Length: 333
Ligand SMILES: [Zn+2]
Ligand SMILES: [Zn+2]
Image (cartoon, rainbow, N blue to C red; front, side, top):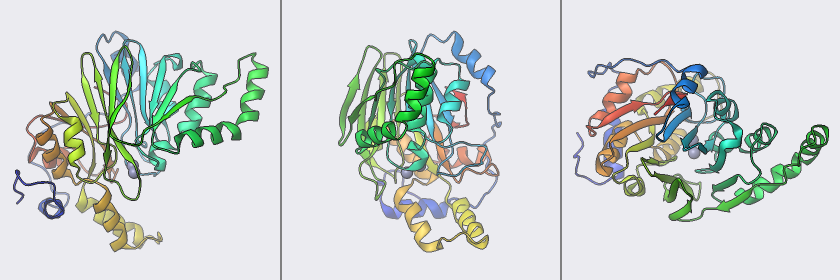
């Protein structure tokens, strides 16, 4: 078993993987909450006076066609909306929350993998058509500025046709602030945002973020191997949204994919997963070390529905005794 006091070493990481029984039914009793409908989300947000977090997409990896969409979130505080990550589906999911596009204030990108940024450009353009203010700002690792300019250039004609037709001011671009290192990112009347650099090779930098609203603090691990930087930025937070990987199921999933003819090799694939992502039990340890109140498991890998909520929750509960929420798309927290 793992010594809870040990550091997040590679040894404990591997030990954690071995300690998780393959798809075993877990002892912790809990019901599986259904994904919410758009109406339920809108009702939950309608009269909210406190800051809300909506999980828009909770599946890890750039895989289409699943019941869990790729990673994205929106936080709503005093009528202002902050989007974190733009996996495929973010625009539609945002719309389903009923938050007007005119409320979108800032977009944050953790790192440049497709399951986190592929719908960044489309969110801007469809958002603009739907009433987004041109002073929306974007934050993320380089080359976010260049990517934004290139995307706008690619869609210039599309933007201009629409602007001409509907007598709108064409979307020029959006202000981008690149984040290259740990520290404060931005601040406004609602929130103070800071970042840390996490471990997600070869992506550099890959970021975790913390949002300190007046009533609530919410930290995000981003994609990372077990990282002390996440412990640091999540210290004492009300909520930690952490990526999570259930290793026995990843191993089985990869073997199945190879059997189906997908051109990947088992050893390099698993080596990548172990160097880049956090096994379930380690997530619990990190939440415990950070002393957060609530742990939200998201960016679940593999994002397959046959892994029960109990299995996810029990693995994290080995080291974390606070509230554990198994993230589902359109969950309002
Ligand atoms: Zn990812
Ligand atoms: Zn990634």
